[in-house]
Amino acid sequence: MTAARDYEDLRYAVEHLSPRQARRLRLIISQDEEFADVLPPRAEDQTDEADDEGDLLPASFLALAGSIDAPADYAENHDAYIAARGDQRGSAAG
Image (cartoon, rainbow, N blue to C red; front, top):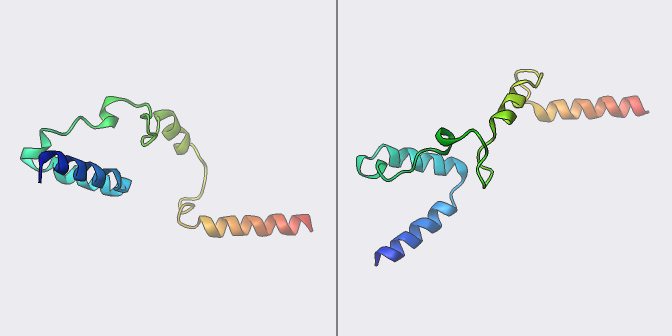
């Protein structure tokens, strides 16, 4: 197998990783002395703005997300909150 084929196979594999898998692979590579030297700097260390692919959120969005007033368990129980709000709207309309 040639190096070109190796690069092609690796590129294909990396392109099909989920964001979680990509972060895990980066962590594994960063902990290996031989491979860590070839990693580029992390994107969030370079800029606060979103990258071209939209993987990172701009700092302004993160500030907005922190200003939302909601119960602490809102993310965990969002289905129940939405169902309750639908029930409230249904009873108010009738």
